[in-house]
Image 1: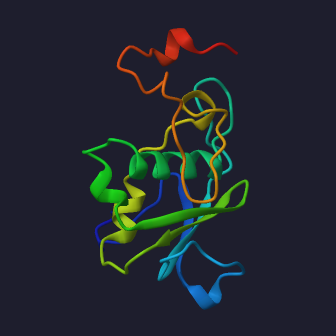
Image 2: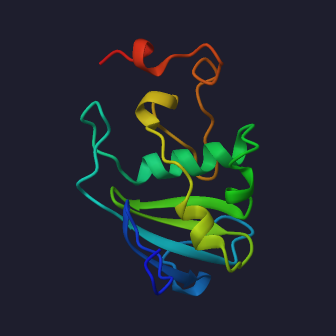
Image 3: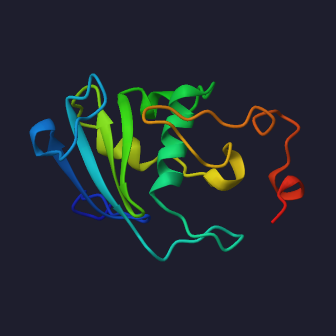
Length: 145
């Protein structure tokens, strides 16, 4: 936040609230509003892979659907995430809320190509690779390029 209490994006360069009638698609069931995000094109993971909207979708849905007590509150109002292009996506919300933008904006983003099952999610959920979700998984030593 800046001194005027406006949010300043670090990964997102733009965001806006959209009603269901403003979307060019049918959102997931239960969606009452969506936040449209644009992701910076100059963000890369440590292995040189470019961060994109699919990484954000994977992160949000994994924290929503997985056993993440610390992140669950931040994503409990998420009905789904719709990737529109490599660098744009909508977070579809089940309920309006004054803190939705802040909550979604503070979710840590994790690399889908390392933690996911190929980084592919279905329309409304993502399931991390169970082997990579174990306490013994080491992403550094286990990652092979």
